[in-house]
Length: 155
Image 1 (cartoon, rainbow, N blue to C red):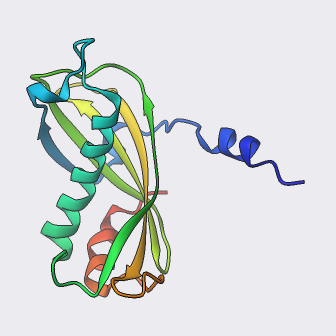
Image 2: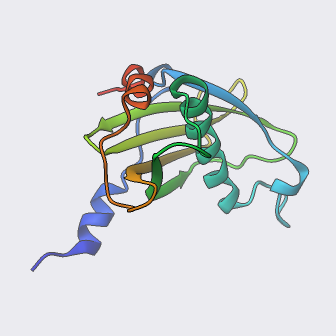
């Protein structure tokens, strides 16, 4: 019998990538409202940072046009491993890499570094599946998007 829980535990192993392993970076300022009652960035906000890093790259380098594109990337999976706290007014240096570039899906790895830190505060995994906007069925990743993702592929 297939044990999904065991499979999930095995897949959650945190990355051992360093700052040098991420081909693209974007600076993301934290906001006062990102902090929670404990004085650090709330855990759900990290996922917003992942989304920002991925979509900044797709828009700036892949020409993604959310309003008019016939194919869109839907998030199929996201997860985060927290290593140290971030808080306002930290600036985050978000590193972006692609660990798998398939026909209709892409797996991103994102590392959130406090500006100037060598070790990541958090490591994320983010999976997009490209679908037809109308039918919501998987389609090949658009050529311009694929061309923007290829330089991010790491082994």
